[in-house]
Length: 160
Figure 1 (cartoon, rainbow, N blue to C red):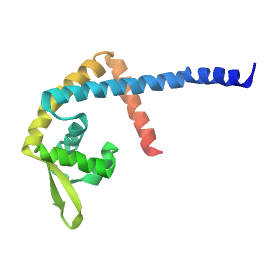
Figure 2 (figure 1 turned 45 degrees about the vertical axis):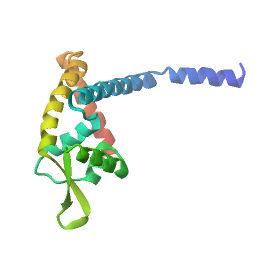
Figure 3 (figure 1 turned 180 degrees about the vertical axis):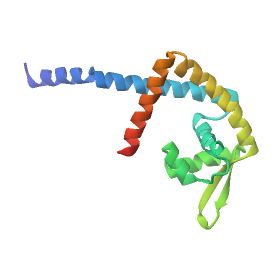
Figure 4 (figure 1 turned 135 degrees about the horizontal axis):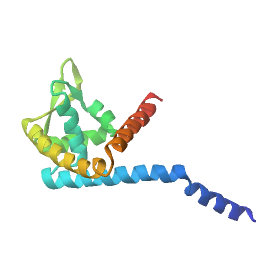
């Protein structure tokens, strides 16, 4: 067998490996679920899934001051990406920027009354999609194992 055929066979074996397959399932499921959520949020509330994620962070602890830099870190966006996102959300009246007390270089972001109202509607649409496609297909025990396992994976990634 010539070296090229061996490389082709080895590449095919690796591409068909259980690790590649299983991780691919995770990515496909997460991507499709995110697409379903985004579609529902855009249809029901005229916001993107990323905007919803910002509103979650702002509404979770309403008295907490959240900087654009922290939002960028939480959402894994660049600072220019989060700036553009907050610009759009501010244009829709969902959030407002306020100066950080004691630090003229920092800007904080807070939800507006409209942002909180949109968030409540969006949370209901989000919950319907998550229930239908993330929770309902699994038994209660499988769902518990899945969420526990995802937490362990996230912890391992965070701690390394």
